Image (cartoon, rainbow, N blue to C red; front, top):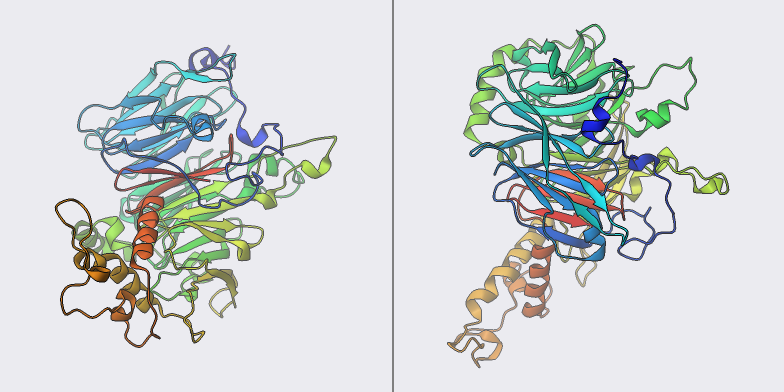
Amino acid sequence: MTTFPLDSAEFGTQVMPIQHRRRSLSKPALSGESNHAHPRGRLVAMFGEHTGPVHRVAVAPDHRFFITGSDDGSVRIWDCTRLERNLAQRSRQVYKHAPDVRVTSLCFLRNTHCFATTGSDGSLHVVKVDVIETTQGTVKYGKLRVLRTWQLPTEDSHVTWSEHYKTEDQSIMMLTTNTSQVYALDLKTMETLYVLDNPVQHGTPTCFCLDSQKHMLLLGTSHGVLELWDLRFRLRLRSWGFSGRSAINRILLHPSCLPHQTDERNQHEPVPFTVCIAGATNTSDITFWNLNKATCDLAFHSTNVDQPAQAASIGRSTASRTFTLHRFDTLLSSALSDQSATSTADALPSHVRALALGSPLHISDANDPAATTKKSDAYLISAGPDRRIRYWNLANPAKSRIVSGLAPDELQPQFVAVEPTTMTSAKVWEERRRFPQNNNDEAVPTKQLSSRIINTQTTPVAEVPVGNDGQRRANVGGRRAGETSVPAVQRADSTRPSGKVDKTKAISEHQQMLLRNHLDAILDVAVVEWPVRMVVSVDRSGMVYVFS
């Protein structure tokens, strides 16, 4: 009786995860291209129902809907099928915490339509979403039902990250708190199985991930420390400290370590444990670490406009066995004072804050072996305070691109491999910006281009007066008396060759850019694979964007 799935009647029947769903490969995407092409950056939908920053977005296991959690205390459910059909763009259901309670974490229960949400008051709520598919092919959403509630025993503590997994006889929810504790909660009996105490001097836990066998837990902290725990023996095995002393924002399991990939390995081979880490370094890096060997094998670097890349910041020494952590004891007070002076997004403007894995659809077709997807189809989506969404091709990083956030006259950057240095043997792929060229075929400098963008946007506001009737006045070109006709671009840089710029066109382009791109720091991203491939991103202003 202990192994009988009693929770199936309460949490709902198991749904087929998208990675194992058998579906047609010929289904067109929204843009008319193959659904396996990389995201093109076409804006599909934009939601503004949240009244506070949106920190988390999670997609249902079968990708029928996704949820967003905000500081306004609400969790909203968005239907993916309505995006494809271009119907009314509004949330289907809303779940609200108590007043003045922020949503601190979100996750779905494994292979169900139930999600777990935690609040800043230390509460945990497990909510079920009833999805009903009618005979006409439409989807209806029933009233949300709260199945479980739980409260942290420690006062003034809250959950910072949560994940769920199932064993043969248990349904376990893993939780990390701002008091550096790790809770294992059984959702069947609502009993605490065990509590792990992480060193407080290593920082507040920010995120974690589990290996494919759910035996190991890798935890990241706000001070750039990685903690490896063995959940079988409740032991902390190792600790690594990054030299950047920056917060670890995301940890994801590499596609080669996913369950359907590890099942195909040789039984005598060790279980791979490779992770993708966003943050921890002083630059905009995504690092790939092989924890079995404690080495960094690969890194992606996205360069800011006015900030050069630092490829040497990723070194083997950061994972050295002799690397000590005593420096965090002496630097803890100064680090806390720095964090209280400025917000995380403002203090770390170049760091990757959001990371999502676009795992390949594990499709098997006996009649067409070529239709079976492989792990080489996997990719990463990253975003951060620079308001840009990047697509990283794991099989061929040179084909990576920026999905959203480019200026109207900015070209797609080049992604090139950097030669390994003496400090590291890891292969580094760096983003290098490209800009339009002038009449002399010389590259436009970065700062010069930025001033062009600012002046073309702001100058016409003062130069084109508007009458009481709402129409422009008859003065030629919108000029005042005695003013010479000098284009805004030439005023920003008098050394450029003479040439007229259409102000109306420039204003229109920038208005379109503002409508298509985020206007504030992006806090989280997710990938939707059904009914078509889309990227969902949320930002600090409370906006939710969906790109195809």
